[in-house]
Image 1 (cartoon, one colour):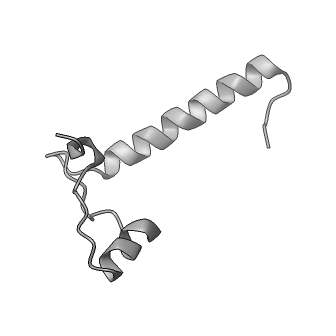
Image 2 (tube, one colour):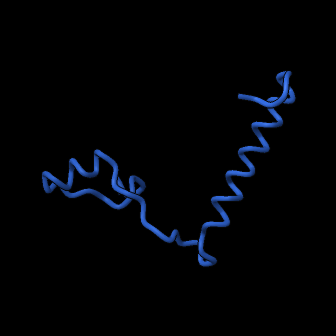
Image 3 (tube, rainbow, N blue to C red):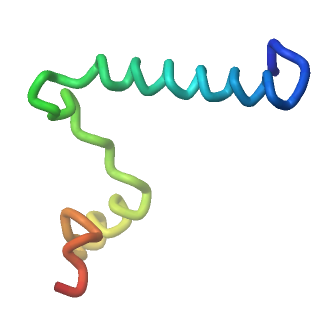
Length: 64
């Protein structure tokens, strides 16, 4: 739900909300840039792990 009427004002509110969320996320990071907790595995990663199928650490390493 948007606080303001009009597409322009609603757009500005959405931008400000996105900025606030990003500031919150950045403030939660440690000074070294590392996250405090690793990400939880996805359902697909759990599927691979249960079947003992090796998976790469990053999709960027595929094909190299």
